[in-house]
Length: 128
Image 1 (tube, one colour):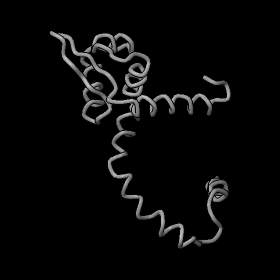
Image 2 (image 1 turned 135 degrees about the vertical axis):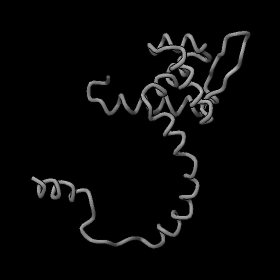
Image 3 (image 1 turned 180 degrees about the vertical axis):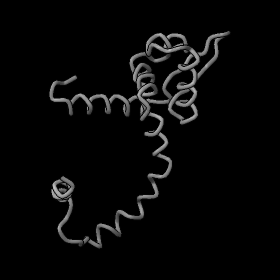
């Protein structure tokens, strides 16, 4: 069985090691631009935070209490995830008396979440 897995996995790799030096030299220095971007995807990799971010794509601004009800959690849990999104630079907040409202930090975040949702639906043959 282990050998079957190796054969199966070897279909998606090169049979020989070679590379195009010109392409590598052109692209490799640009890899430094990725630094810091992983924190965005890390923040959105949690299912609850992704639900919160998605809810914020559907409504410009939501109160912590509304988010808690939308995702079916406590306000403490909702607040925790919103705070993490804010610390990751993905959300903003404002206080109005005793209420705290959150919104996505900009349209780039909105587009990122929206595009991920479309991509996920496209990958599902049933469109769910």
